[in-house]
Length: 217
Image (cartoon, rainbow, N blue to C red; front, side):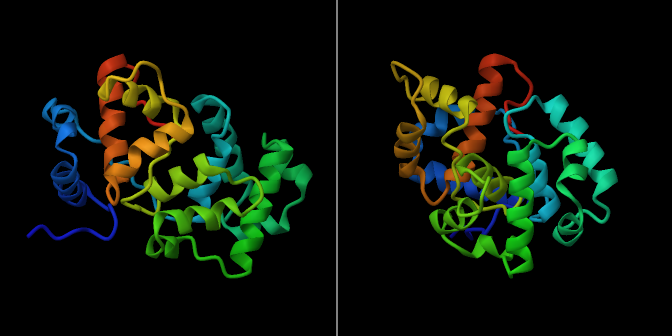
């Protein structure tokens, strides 16, 4: 019997998760048979990585990289304690908007109060997501992307991601691209492997469009 990984840490875990996914969703076999490599894109479940995702909200990847580079110089070491010692003006001069500064502070204060980002992997997907979105400035997309790519949660599906929505439209032969709620509903059938399904759909989107990885970060 296949051993189910508690989280997706490496290619072996991803392959095991894909086998489990296809066992409950054989209709996705067509996508898997295309042979497109599934994106692992794993990062450590740290404040710095959550900050990187917040920085990437609603800006181009190039702009996000430039801002984050300035933040790495400013926030040294890159942790919650250092952020709490900096002023809003200092963070703003690095390129953060007021909303993102508020998010940095909310997460930093939560960590100071005991939030364990790495420990979120031990929670069911909905509970882990709820813990993050309870913080000011952390929305569902940010929470889902962190849980998927940093915590390695196997059952997270960023339903608000446009590339995933477009991949769903094509893969399931839908008349139109589904919205966030419809994408969430469609993905429920793939639990507890929604994170693997998301990677499979991103790979499908990349093949459909030829637009790089299609990944949000």
